[in-house]
Length: 168
Image (tube, rainbow, N blue to C red; front, side, top):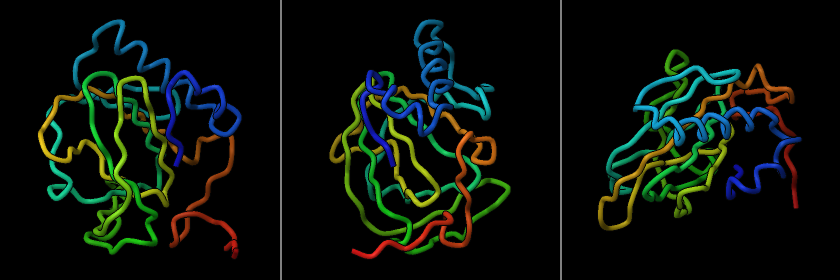
């Protein structure tokens, strides 16, 4: 998981060059006031979303195996919850057609402000568009970057990603 201000996106360019497509699209959304909907972007697609946040208990964690999620908050505010997929329990098994798996458990709550972004990988469970006590308005861009089109290699297996176990 990567989370930062958009002004620091250059720090991540070498890791995920496709982030530039996401940022350029978010700038276009702001400049042209693009309506809610789905749009082609770079090596994937994007959604412009807006609405009211929901309580954390009204949402489940989600993960994706075919796409990285880049979520950029444009207006309003939102909170989201993060957890490593291995620390959660599967609620609905992975659906390859919809590229989503639903999970239950708890993680770390994070507050987003306009001008911030986060990027999640297949092992990064996330619960977006939430609030702690009162619903608030948000407008955001969610860019889906195809993992198999990335310049760097991200493989998925039954654990989410091909990686070596690191012991401390």
